[in-house]
Amino acid sequence: MDPRVESVPLFNGFSTAEMEGLKKCLREKSFEKGESLFLEGNDCQQIFLIREGRAKLYRTSSSGREQILETLGPGDTCACNPGCAAWSCVSSAEALTPCKVWYLQRKDYVHLVQSNSKLAHTLNLLFAEKLRRFSCLIEEVSLKDVRKRVVKFLLDMLNENESKGEAQKTLFVPFTRQEIAQRIGTSRETVARYLHELKRSKLIDIKSHQIFILQKEKLSQLLN
Image (cartoon, rainbow, N blue to C red; front, side, top):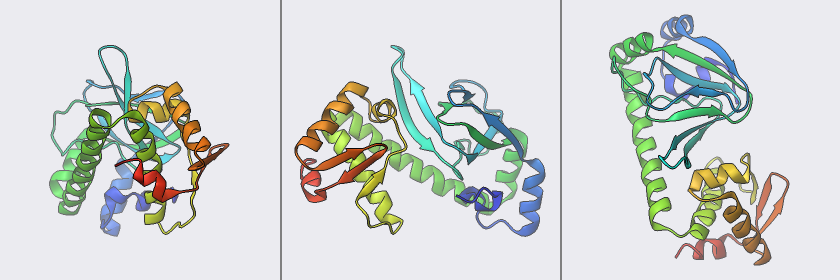
């Protein structure tokens, strides 16, 4: 992933002058694995953009159960603020690996959104995509049994690879089983059990950080 600011999708369409102005406002910060970037309910003082590493956005229930909303990688942003001067964080963020991030102070971000129609348009697309993903997440967690959630997680990763032009059926899985469990709303032990059931059925094979999709069509039939 290109670590330059110009590669961040949020700033697509910026002119050279606009990009130079943006760079003057950006600051860089490093986080260790497990360190918190921000906490749910706090005032949103800055917008983060991942330069290197991965971070998770999550919410915690009153019982202490954690639900991962999405995982951010290089070029991704936590931006949920549409440009309001007052805004609270609707989720928490934690570094899954050592991270380097750029951050933009709220006042600078608000000014950019209010003065740049291209950024406002890109944010509309970003919010629409987040809404689609969160709607799918709600459906998966509330309506599908756990085995279907595991299968859909694998197929979604495969489809994402195929959309990038990667035809191979080998999935590099940058998540621990605990992270997968938190992502689909179940326990680590349950994820491990269903993955091994799929392996015993010869639908997948499992190696270190890799899952081989052996029978995509039969996997898809499990969602019916």
